[in-house]
Length: 213
Image (cartoon, rainbow, N blue to C red; front, top):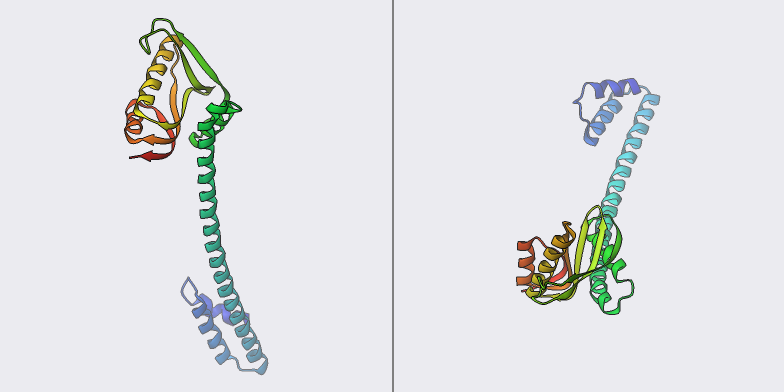
């Protein structure tokens, strides 16, 4: 009986569908001569039907599971975005309260920018000749990060054009004084559009929740 089915299958096309299987089994049933062969053929036919229905049910459930997984993934991405926004706000507020500020900024940048950072601190330099602001002043940076590369970070609740220009001038002074090249990053809950555009122009990277047009 199995040999007869295999003979039919081997003579058929290479890719066999359920419809092909059903046709083959029906042919086998018709060609069965003895009662035992007919019963066996019918049993095989019933088994094939059962398998077909089982696979169809499995496919249906798999599609339902796939849809649920996609919905879960969208919710997870939404939660992840909310968490990132919250970290930005905490970073912006951290300067005011001070506690754990550098650590929060370091973790935020490491996650958003995909950088490996192990050290975070503040950086202050004395501009005795007044190169930055026109008068002698202490040049302070909110956060100084270092590992594979050195990064200077400015943190603002709202970043305006003047903030970008000041940060850029301070960084140029730091590079000249320390003879180091720094990556510049500004973290802000909101950027004015002109400030955001100026960052793009000057090569200052940004982490922002929104752009104010």
